[in-house]
Length: 231
Image (cartoon, rainbow, N blue to C red; front, side, top):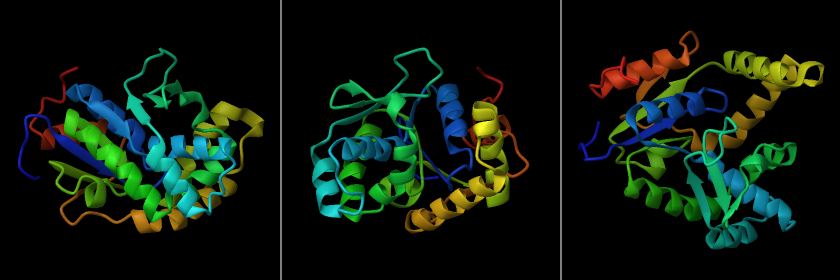
């Protein structure tokens, strides 16, 4: 852990499907902090790129788009089960973030160095304002290298695929992709995200294959000296 501030900055990293979102949101709620899923920034930019027909391979055009976009990740403004509200240039686009088109293109959009540099500025500014639990793939190494606590969630691709397939089967029934398709997609995402999935040297590694989300949250709260029984 780094030097303690009045409001902590907590970084949680890990691959797609590792439970970052669930764990980060629950931890933030217990601490009374803002939950920031950095992936939401890149998804918002992908929504904008698709709307303007910008090629996901065009790094220069995407960088210009990112530099001009006003992306806000806020606490939920609608009681519909969302973990946060995302506004793009003032418009609520939360419901557009996980469409098939966004899912298929977000890793390509976020891979460009210029895009990441532009988006990181917005993410760091948000973390400077208040206590945050920020989740992503390069939070502890690049976005918040001086975070007060860095967590890296480690879980096998097989277990991540099992969890994701279960969620999709619950949501989509017979229309859900097969376990093999889900696993292949996660492996593809891992390959695309590999450059951003470096573990910080001072991160605490938590293996979550056999842990429930609440158990991970309790472990992190214990690291912070918090009473994990507190609501």
